Structure formats: structure tokens, C-alpha cells
Length: 191
Figure 1 (tube, rainbow, N blue to C red):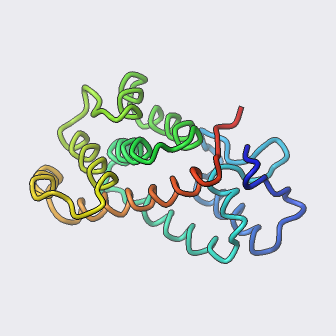
Figure 2 (cartoon, rainbow, N blue to C red; figure 1 turned 30 degrees about the vertical axis):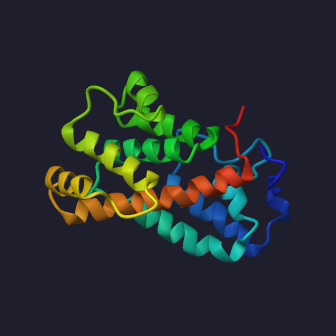
């Protein structure tokens, strides 16, 4: 997967590194629609990169779990659209797109909507809230300063309040972090 952060065989993991395996299993369950381990059972994707900083593993998974499980604040479709917008802005390697195509299809986005979303465009046929989640996530991820006043007003109005805008902001921030891990690691999709 990556010559920069080669997968660490399970037999070579320290006890702290092993917690990443446990956390992945807890986060994804048995019915995960993408691979997060290679054929030898080593963690891949951002999880494999995390193994190189084992003291961050507990905090990273605690944050990732909290940010991604914000239902019913954000619907699964809204979350996936926000992830695609963030991944597009950060030119994320194929691993994030590979994993989230499978998740997005599972939550009801069509193949055409997924292609549009991963191409930096709001897909056709989504609700107004989903559209605003995508465009607001795109603006948050693109911005090196504050969210525009117009973007803020639209997001608060359409998403019905500050709580949903804050949840979206946290989701984007989490995927910016994940994008950094896969970008620096040069992590591609499994074959």
C-alpha cells in the first residue's frame, strides 16, 4: 500500500498498537463494506499510518468515533456528501474515495451522485439539506479563514441551527486530519 508507512504485521504490533485493531473492529463491526486490513491482517489506510504514532491511537479513535457517529444530528447521506467534499478539496488519494464510495452506496447515494460528489460538485437529486451539507463542507475545507457570512447564514437556516453546523464542522475537521494521514502516507486503495 505505501512504501512511506509499510503495513506492520500483526505479530509485530506492540500492545498499544493492537488497540488500533480493536478500535477498528469496534468502529466498523463485522459488516464493513471496505477493506481496512491487507491479506496478512495488517491495518491499512489511515489506520496503518496511525500505528507509527501509537500514543495517538486512543485519542484519534475516540475523536473519530464521536465525529462519525453524530446521528441523528447529521444523516448518513449528509455525512458522506461532506466527506466527498472534504476529500476533493484535499486531493485525497484513492483510499478515502474507495472506502467512502462503498459507504455512500450503502446509504443510498447513486453511482452518478457519487461521481459528481467526488468531482467537487453538488450531485443532482439530493435534498436541500444534503446540498447545503456538501457546499458548506466544501467551503469549510477550502477556507483558510472564517466561513463566509452568506455560507454561515445559509447553513444555519437550511440545516436548522447551530448544532448541525457545528456537527458538520467537526466532521470536516476529522476528515481533514484523515486526509493528511493518507496524503502524507501516499495511501492508495487496496487492489
